[in-house]
Amino acid sequence: TQAERPATRSTTPRPAPRAFDFSQLPGHKQIRLQHSAAEMLEIEVPYFREQSGYAGPTCMIEGRELLNFSSYNYLGLNGHPQVRQAAKDAIDKYGISVSASRVVAGERDLHGRLEAGLARFYQTEDCVTLVSGHATNMAVIGTLLGPKDVVLTDSYIHNSIVEGARLSGAARVTFPHNDFDWVEDFLDRNRGRYERALIVAEGLYSMDGDWPDLPRLVEIKARHDAWLMVDEAHSVGVLGETGRGIWEAQGVDPASVEIWMGTLSKTFSGCGGYICGSAALIELLKANAAGFVFSVGMAAPLAAGSLAALEVLEAEPWRVTRLQENGKRLLEKAQAAGLDVGEARGSAILPVIVGDSARAAMLSDYCYKAGLNALPITFPAVPEKQARLRFFLTSEHEDAHIDRAVEIVAEALETVRGRRLPFGTAV
Ligand code: PMP
Picture 1 (spheres, rainbow, N blue to C red):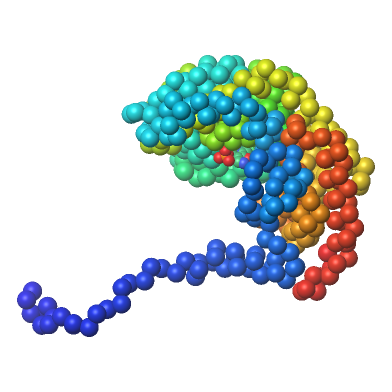
Picture 2 (picture 1 turned 120 degrees about the horizontal axis):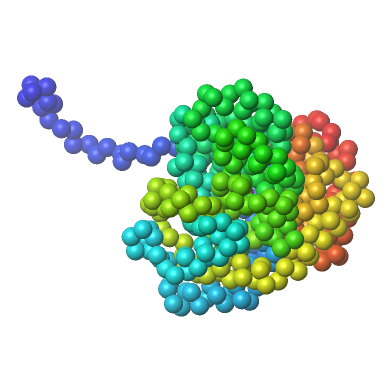
């Protein structure tokens, strides 16, 4: 009412409202702690280092050429002239962006050709691509599952699967890494409580460089009327004689797995994710997956580049053989040097487990200064006592690169051994 209004307004100018200070949030405190820890250890923070030029078996950082074991360019296709030319031609024809969701105005011939190529490669009926691998996992699980369902995930599963399960509203159950007796037991006792059950595993685990027993998983899911999804981010182009991934490596019929997922950012040198599976599954996703329907179509140069990468992979299977030989060599050399490589099987990924996070960070810093780019993986990405340096191989690494990398790690371990931390504990 009139009586409640102030009679006059103050004429003194008020300061403009300040936006919230996000440094007050606990997550920001954590970041500051990380920086102070690096300072105390007298090391550089190893993240967000700017690379200039092509990241292959070597890379350029701060004007220095380093041996590079920190890129997912597994088959070296990101530097392949055919792949680069295809991307350039697509820019000339279409420009950089397709500027809209494919549903409305973003569809280009390259999308269909890439998807047909991937479906043929996987021997599935169809395929759909999305603009991010992470978003693909969220979209597919978020679309297919709901609150009456359960998602069973390996304890080492990627964050994007966890986020997808969360989005879906389904119950999420984590099983111990590769422990399928546990999965059997859970489903025997609980399958009836849920409408649908989805088991998710990776084709090659990026923390440990090991893989699941896929025939066993297929058998379990079939007996318990569950669905199976395999994330092949790190296994396509890497496992199997011709790089078709875990189904080729383990002799599984791809049609027995409901959902094949992969990313285009690694072997296929692009950016985006894909799902391969039945025609009905793909139709369903194209109509309902929010990350597809309400997001822009893949940029034409990226689709063209990944399509060319797929063609090169099929035409040059020697790249896969070479990568696998490199994997064996790195494993043998690391074991001979007495390094702890955990469960690694000698493929494109090798962890060197070194103990706690501070130790991993110091070792990585030593390696960096000695000319080797291999990043530390620390808590909470892995348990605190399992912190590690992680090596990703490419088919382009030469024997001498691998041998030198192992030498540097052994030297680093020797140098850092017994060094006392500023806060008293020895590492
Ligand atoms: N799944 C797995 C297993 C991954 O490792 C990653 C990323 N490294 C993703 C999905 C997400 O893929 P992208 O980085 O292409 O978005």
